[in-house]
Image (cartoon, rainbow, N blue to C red; front, side, top):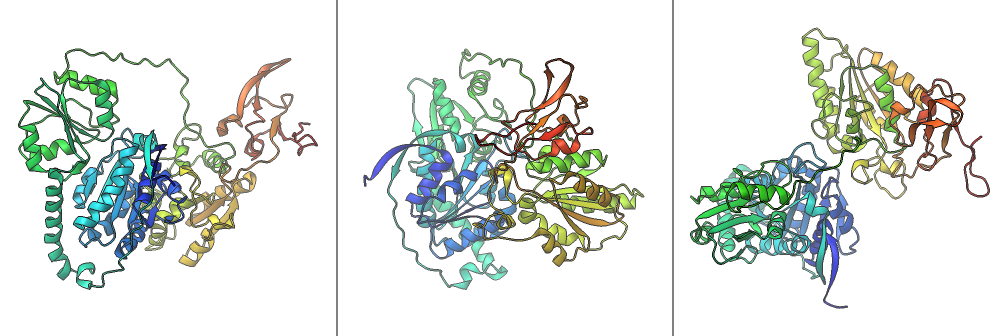
Amino acid sequence: MDKSTNKVLTGNQAISRGFYEAGGIIATSYPGSPTVGIIENTKAYEDVYSEFSTNEKVALEVAIGGSFNGARSMVAMKHVGMNIALDPLMTFTETPINGGFLLVSGDDPGLASSQNEQDNRYLGKFANMGILDPSDSQEAKDYTKKAFEVSEELSIPMMLRITSRLCHSRSIVNVEDRVDIKQSGMDRDWKKFCMIPANSRGSQYFIKERIEKLEEYAYDTDLNRLENKDGTDTLIITSGLMYNNLKELDIDASIWKLGLIYPISAKKAKEVTDKFNKIIVLEEMMPFIENELKLMGIKCEGKKYFSFTGELDLKDIEEGLFKAEVIKDKSIEEIKNSETVVRHPVFCTGCPHRSTFDILKKAKTKLIVGDIGCYSLAALPPFEKSNSIISMGASIGITKGLSKAMKADGNTEPIVAVIGDGTFFHSGIPSFINLLHQKGEDENITIVVLDNRTTAMTGGQHNGSSGLYNEGDDMKVGIKTLLENIGFDRVKEINQYEYKEAKKLIDGEIGYDGLSVIVVNGPCALKYKLEKPHYYVDPNICIGCRSCIRTGCPPLKMKEYEGIEKLKSSIDSDMCVGCGVCAAVCPVDAIKQSKPKDGDGDHIDN
């Protein structure tokens, strides 16, 4: 085959390709936007072992094991996932690197799909890793390959920091052949890898030495480049996607484009910046590069002119440069969006969680502790039934703390906590075990485990219970059985689509004066392609009460029927998947299910 060809790839696809071309062997992740596509694409390469692990900590540990044996290994996660992985990471970075090691962090400026906007460049520095920041898909691939070379050459773990916009945007990438790297086997010198205090003390010097070596490498690396423009005394220092945005504005200034953003060579930085009177740092989120330069004694400004939060688009950058007096005039007009109807994100058509939250809303429970997953949408209209959403698995521990505090205050109000199956396996199990410690007999806690047997919010990746629906999935953990084996003596299970039975059970358990768990199951309609005969509305029976509309199901709407003055509900048959929640909540039985398909393949309304 040809040695190279061009393809249009997303940043995520380019990282997967770079890992493959670099001879990568072990690739792991926990699914999370914006990096979920990396492992989805890596799975296509036969020479690579890849997996979506139970959580980010486990994913990191699997990749560490591969690196220990000399295999080039990569772990990918969204920025908050790094918080879960920090425990092993902070110790692993004390050890030598055998096989090249890369951690990909997907940062999310503007919080497109995240609960916070942390800047993981700081965590990369904190963990004593080299940090690369690509600006397009080609660099995403090239930097991935370069990371493994540097990692093995200097025995240092590397981070590739990429943002949501770059993960999902596309550009032309030069695709090359794979280079196979022979594994060396694990170094059995226990003093290097057993991080007990006696060995760890010496490792602190080892960490310092290799960061210093990487700073020496940074002095003349081609990952950083100076683009001089004659006749200007202004230098703009930038990295990542901001470089392309800046280039599009064609500013009268020189640019120092950084690919290796940590460590920055102090010697090189002073040589470059000494030639300019005005130095501006352009970067999204926190002033990481700006602070690094200031620690070197270099006078520069950045966040004085650019926002510390959100994405920086062309308008934002031009506005900042105008304030900094780098440009005299602004040319980009303010974009005025036409007024549109606000539409909140909603559960998918046929989502089994819709019936559960409709039940919880009607139960008039005032205190519901939410968690991370599709069911986070329950905080929004039409349900508005979550009082807190903090992090993966936090609902269970928070509920315990709330209960203890409320009891001390004489408050006996019932508490409901919800957690999804993916989150349960990710980080919920330890919290469930902790619930049994010093458990009060009269604490009114009801925990609802939403088991749709997939990690739905990130695209339907497997989790620990997926094998109960899919023969192809090899994890078949029954949540009810697991909780009973842990020691919970009151665990009920019911199908979420069985609305009336589920309502009776949930209402009863909320009224139970003690700790109970309800596992509500039902297949993710999107993942498992739920499709039953659609429902329809008989407008002559419908009273226009909007009970069905309040479930927030997308096929439902109010409309005018010929010959009927009052608006009645209706169902878009092309969108309806036949879950039946609307019919279950209708007080007058105006919603009917169509007959199975006829000979022409059509459902028939009575």
